[in-house]
Length: 204
Image (tube, rainbow, N blue to C red):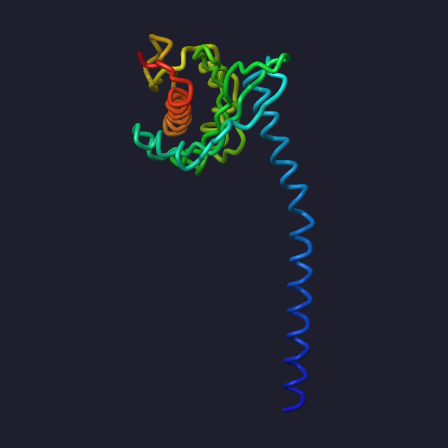
């Protein structure tokens, strides 16, 4: 019996020590992870708004309220998780960077930021997180596909597999229509939210 008690106490001590060590490691890594995530976001913001000098949080931004807006507009698989104001060198707001999380990617969630100017022009998007199929859905991170979203009117975009005939159409990635639609719907959700905060008329 004494041996059993001793073994139990030893196991308990080992468990407590191991748990404390894991907790300490977790706490130590939290700050570097947060800094890395913030650096990734800032890089994404700059990618879609090269002319901006600074980015400030949109006053009063509410992720739940923003997501409700786009869900009610039909983008039920998309969440608006962030929005910052892009400011020029003089501190004047020149547009917004909207971060969207879409849940209908082929390989899982896709997280990216979309730049839209005050004039209602899409500056393109920059990926934050994606796990689509290499050689197929991952082509959504390549210039050929991404460039279709640069410098076009902030409007409702549709995906085509037969060749685009207008600015409002996006050529699907061959073999990755699901990813193409997921990204395009995410951009559309961002446009919908932009309209709600900027009084835009992108679809007029």
